[in-house]
Amino acid sequence: MTLEYLQNYWWLLISVLGGLLVFLLFVQGGQSMIYSLGRTPGRRDLVVGAMGSKWELTFTTLVTFGGALFASFPLFYSTSFGGAYWLWILILFSFVVQAVSYEYRRKKGNVYGSKTYDAFLFINGVFGCLLLGVAVAMFFFGAEFTVNRGNILQGTDPVISQWTSTHGLEAIFNWRNLVLGVAVVFLARMQGALYLLNRVKADESFTNALRQKALINGGIFVVFFLAFLAILLSFTGYDVVSEGTRTVSVSPAPYKYWHNFTANWWELVTLLIGVVLVLYGLYRGCFSKNFRSAIWFTGIGTFLAVVALFWAAGYGDTAFYPSLINPDDSLTIRNASSSEFTLTAMSYVSILIPFVLAYIFYVWRKMDAPKLTEAEAEHGEY
Image (cartoon, rainbow, N blue to C red; front, side, top):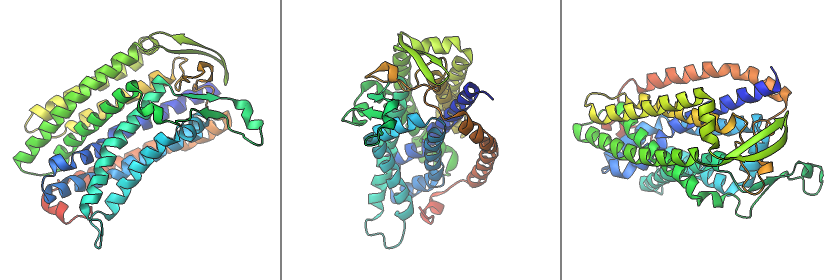
């Protein structure tokens, strides 16, 4: 296994984890509708109970995603997580209050009351998705940083990556980033409604409300996602020439991501299949009265579309983390990766991933086999 092969392999794994993470954000999407769907305490318990059985998967996948990036592409990890720390602190804070809410919402002696923790779940549902979308958008639209590898030799200040004084806050107010962030929010809400449709057993009025929520949020998602694709495919990216781990040249490339998709047909095909599956699942879930498995179509479609977008960001001699200050400092899967020894050692460990995924799928099916009712949710732990 050559270093180039290992770099491609680990970017593939990062893409898979990114796709899983965005799919699992249906938990956040369900939480964001805790007030609109849960107009009574019993309904709120039903929504929280359904999402409460899956929230650990989203949190664990987020941590695994960050850990895999740290191990395989440490220069990106130090640049983004260490430089844009205000953005990442806000993301992590929203997920911490989620964990606290599920732990203490129904606990006896809770002095804050369940309404406080319901508000925390709503905050995580909206802002967690929005900020993660902004963070992912930076893979395409860049960030305000510079990289100087020579700084590591300075004993007093061995910092390789330097960020602007706003340290990631500027990314939140970048309109291109916000387009993807808003799309992720409404995708998660659509997925949350479709998951609840599959998971809970409730009266017809509640299931009709779920279909209506899925249709409205799905429609808004489609608008923003198409806007994001239009911006992305017409955006000027960077062509990068590399020799091993050294960047030789970086040059602007108009319509870079469009050329990536057309040059690598498998990226375009994967994206189109993902989009078709999302639209098919949304249509069947909203308009087929007895069809409750739409989440699997939209979920698989979401996974494939996100994987394809990550491929377009990393493959094809592309800067997957462009520098808006100095394009020559942009990060690629060639110059940001770990050593060949580290990537090789981790590759053997990655063989266990299919077995872990199979176990998760088995446990998921077992947990979701009996449909959750309002009476069961009332006596649940969440």
